[in-house]
Image (cartoon, rainbow, N blue to C red; front, side):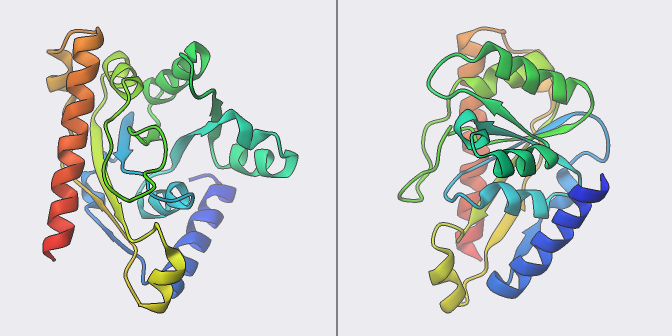
Length: 205
């Protein structure tokens, strides 16, 4: 990890453990080297740094273009490997950047649902994650985050905020799919199916 990123990673872990008894599981499923995608549900603004804190590798992030309007915040998230994407349109440049990142051997965090779920329930995945996955052909690690939607409530009721990683979707499986809308949908549906299984497993504990 780069020095600034590692410092932020250590600080995020330290504060999260104190405030929300932060727990991370399944880190061994993240490939030790080479490009990969982490695909996680999204229920809070703080999900990106929490998933980053749980990851065993340095992550890269997609962030909506509006977040870079504030000069300081834009500089900060850029230092933490975030890059801009325009929501609501087919952002060819943003998608190309995402594909190049994972093809270059880095790990990219994606939220397949595209935006936060306001009620905490899983939503249908956008097709963009399928396109990135099929163009890059790298393992996709499903992830599930819980209890981050209401951090004040989690703090006072001592609910653990947790991030759980699952067994990756292999690049070999992806190679068998068509690189079209049908393939994108199949990837997106498989990702959400895996995240759903992680969610169910966390409720059983």
